[in-house]
Length: 221
Image 1 (cartoon, rainbow, N blue to C red):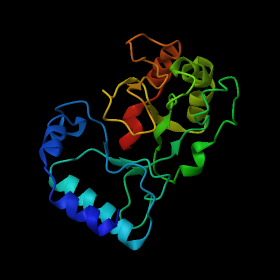
Image 2: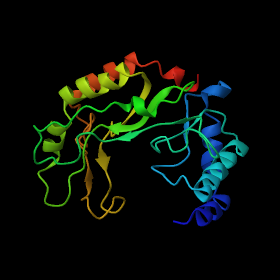
Image 3: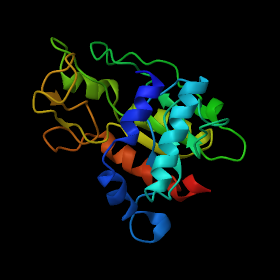
Image 4: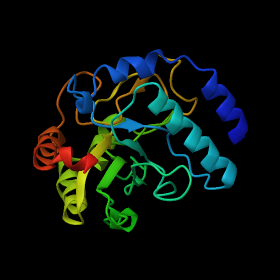
């Protein structure tokens, strides 16, 4: 979508969500919200794209958002006009071929997206994989992104300096047949740490350990 059109939509949007978040921010001492993601996978670093991002940031601040502003834009907005407090990588190193769950790809170094003076944060890192129509099923996706994957890949992120990680998904649910994109069926189990049936996958323990060892409070340092 054209950035100018995006700005117009943002300006006319309902601010109820902003107000709800503002009531639960750690910075205000009234809740546990530690960051606010401004956009999602937006990589337009043009003048118009940066103006759009700046507009969203100004809108959030004007509506009471005081926590650090973040994004998963692969560092596009780590500096310059529209710069976020923390812009981190969006990474799915294993891909989505659940038909071959024993095949591992290389372990990435997300440190490339670590500007001086800012914390290294992974706002969207692989925690599962989607299963398309006619696919092998989400149990195979859970094997692709299993507890061994979590133990190696998430630790690697910590080793290169990550002080916060957000896994997509930690909880896999149901899209009720109409919320998801056409390529996916009703289930959004995703092979996640918490499965669609509410059962805990073995990697839930690994995810919990990683979360316990990451000083997420450093996000706003």
